[in-house]
Amino acid sequence: MRKHEERRVTGTVRTIDVDRGDAAYRSWLKEAVRKVQADANRSADTHLLRFPLPGEWGVDLYLKDESTHPTGSLKHRLARSLFLYGLCNGWIRPEVSVIEASSGSTAISEAYFAQLIGVPFVAVMPRTTSREKCRLIEFHGGRCHFVDDPRTMYAEAAALAERSGGHYIDQFTYAERATDWRGNNNIAEAIYSQLRLERHPEPAWIVATAGTGGTSATIARYTRYMQYDTRVCVADPENSCFFEGWRDNDPDATSERGSRIEGIGRPRMEPSFLAAAIDRMMKVPDAATVAAVRALETVLGRKAGGSTGTGLWSALKIVAEMVAEGRAGSVVTLICDPGDRYLDKYYSDAWLAAEGLDIQPYAMAIDAFLSTGRWPG
Ligand SMILES: *Cc1c(COP(=O)(O)O)cnc(C)c1O
Image (cartoon, rainbow, N blue to C red):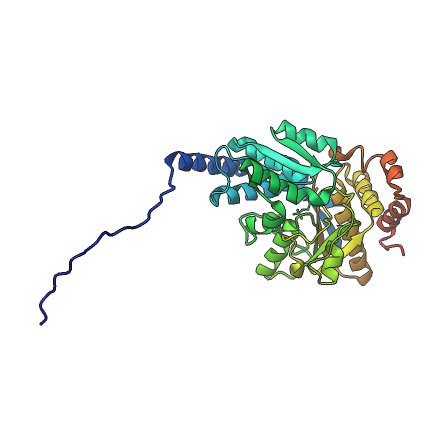
């Protein structure tokens, strides 16, 4: 047996050791996460409304009413996810300004969460954003910072964060990954659970619209993960490149002008728009969007934002297709935000005239379809 050798340490032993653990920050963080989670815990699920259609058509149409969130749009879900993601990543900290590039709705919801946890908030947005949205951002304690060219919004937000030592929350990059797509009562899981007692509980189609692309990504991933047969259709407005980029498989697709339909339609292929997960897309004329959102008021007695009309137009077209094929089933689309934010836009005939939009042929097409079950043209 070898004799145990004695080893001695010679020289100086050094480890570079930096501990950023800060008790005050960690207790602030805990409290901030609790406040965001508590907001979710106080909230009820949003309604799944029926859009009445003749029963003998065999097709049921539903609208998930995302306008009833505390900040009035589906962006309430996104803002909650982005704040939790930023907090848990250590990006959102006490005294650090949160900065976002937004056409409005995301900024309203983020201003709400920033105020809830007590950090400053700045929204960088196109000058054409509706005044009502700016008022709501300021109501929740946020500040609005305008750009003339919507395409410069991202660079401006990043530069502002750089200059001020703030955190650029970047919805267009992080929307798809901040959301729990496997479940955790995300929008898709909620839709399926609310359809459970319907005659067609597994929808043939879910129709979404895309701004960040986060909602359509979550729905598409969830239906695949759960092995449902549901197909996902994204309805895209004029002046957006999502449709062309998706159709041509071109991640570099761009469009020249900003979308007229607030919240959706982008001039570049956003990183959160997961094209490969989308089964089908439709390019919807803006006049059809407005005709559809006005038809929604006639049928359901409520006003909604433009993007709701874009999705509803596509959903009605799909319903017509199913009726024509004699195929029973259900179709789901979304009410994305409320119409009172857009009285001077989609509900204003003066705005339509100024934009050169003639909704008459589309309004007549919807009327004809709802009374005959046949899609004109
Ligand atoms: C953001 C938004 C959408 C689209 O949702 P995404 O998840 O960002 O693709 C639709 N309608 C309105 C009003 C929106 O603000």
